[in-house]
Image (cartoon, rainbow, N blue to C red):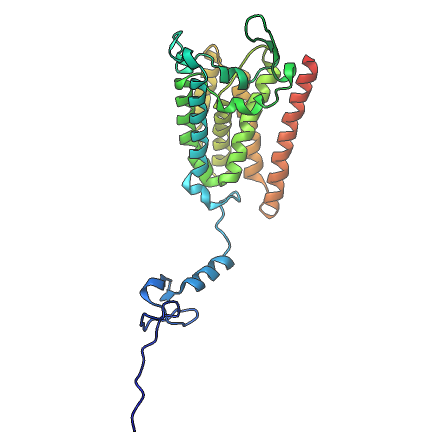
Length: 304
């Protein structure tokens, strides 16, 4: 009487591969190509995928996604600012290497900064064709946003991007990318609204420094909330505030507006009760946005 041959088990995903290893969860045979190391033994791809679906995603201390550890949002913001700077230089056209300003390379105005900087109300245009421009002058509300991505020259850009690289990665890591970008935009908007409200109607201002000042304030708040030393950031804030008042041509209102807005937004993000964190953070930041919008509207009415 002949015995039937004993066949080796084969991988359930690759029938051509023999294996004696089984998934520790479902106990199906798996080959080396399908093995995923587990705390005990190995798991198959399907069990790994199922485990990920049932596992709660990692969150930061302030409710943000752990994806912020990669610093993608900070790199993207820096990339946007650099691209806008290149467009600004190119917008100078034939004047890009003339007049000592190099079309914005060394700090001069460009057609793009004229189009997108914060401006209350002013008249400028081609000779013989004056035109009203500005937020109050021509309803150019977009300036409150575009101004935070425009710079007067390469040096202006480099200073702000260096600060953004240092501060941004740390804040994105602890806040998560969504909350971090919301903080950046609100701080930038707050600084631009302050410049609009407190500057002369015909005075232009632009730069990411409004948002950067907000990030400085946020770093101070988050360090306090985490019960860590504020020694690394406090001197930086003081030096930059003194620099703001000491150097002519800097928008004092813009810097201080970004600082205050960033501080308020960071307090909302850092001190929201854990149980209703998302609601408090969302409603709080939305309230800050509404207040800024109301201030801008009131300023517009006063200039009309």
